[in-house]
Structures are given as structure tokens and as C-alpha cells.
Image (cartoon, rainbow, N blue to C red; front, side, top):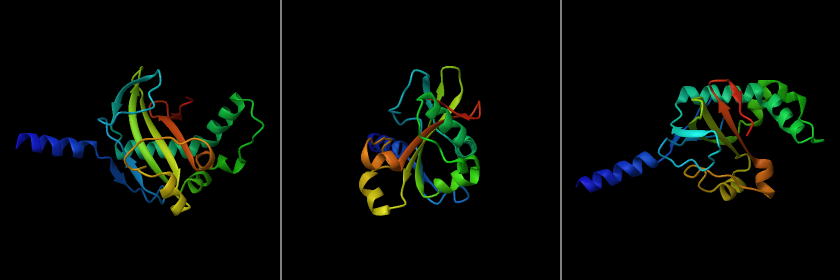
Length: 168
């Protein structure tokens, strides 16, 4: 009996929570808790945390506010000739760009104790294609590469202590 209860408990604890935040976007979001093995551990990764709704909302707002500046700095660091559209200087335009993207949220603390929220964005504008390419998006943290994924997925790590998008 105890084994059955523990088995059910561990299944439940591993299941990501689905959220919808209608004031921020039209898609769905999934929160991966601290027991989920975060696959993208960089050198600053210390320990996992479960993002709460307030942290997610703050992270989304930081993404909307700093998107243009962050993308520009990334492009500049690679000496890219590609230019980001200046309309993304406005938060509302960034929010509109990502309005039909589904989200993945995970969290961790870094080596100096800052809380980092990972946001994976998946374009569900074309539902049929999205369901094909982003199969299991709501149960597995992942990144695709090449082709379809290049224009339909983005990811960001938001440092809540420093109120900025991390450059990784």
C-alpha cells in the first residue's frame, strides 16, 4: 500500500503544471517543478527551484521590456548584419509577437544565489505544424534545431534579482 502511495506521489510531483495567463498571452504555459531534471545546466547552475506565478509574471514582463535591448546585444556580439525591428522597443509589440506562443517555465538559482527563470517559447500560431514539431512540449523541456525550429522557438533565462535577461 505504501509503495502504491509513493508511486502515485512521485508521478504527481513529476507532472508539470499547466497555467494560462490571459493578461499576458493567449497560449498555454507549463511549469516544471524543482524535481524535474533541468537539461540545460550551464556553469552558473546551482540548484533547481519551482517558479511560482508571481515569478513567472515578473519574468514575462522583464522579457517584454528588455527584449529589444537583449536581442540587439546578442546580434552585436556576433557582429551580425541582421537588424532587429525597432518596433520591439515597445513592450506591447513584444507581447503581441509572442501572444500565440506556448511557454515552458523552469527555475534555478545560480552560483551567487540569484533566481533564474527559464522561458521556452513555442509558436503555436499554426496549430497543426506546432503539434507535430512540439510534441510533448508540455511534459519535456527541449530545444529543436534547424528548419522549422529556427523561426518558431526561442528561449530566455531571466535573472529576477537583477531584473534582466541573462546572456548565455
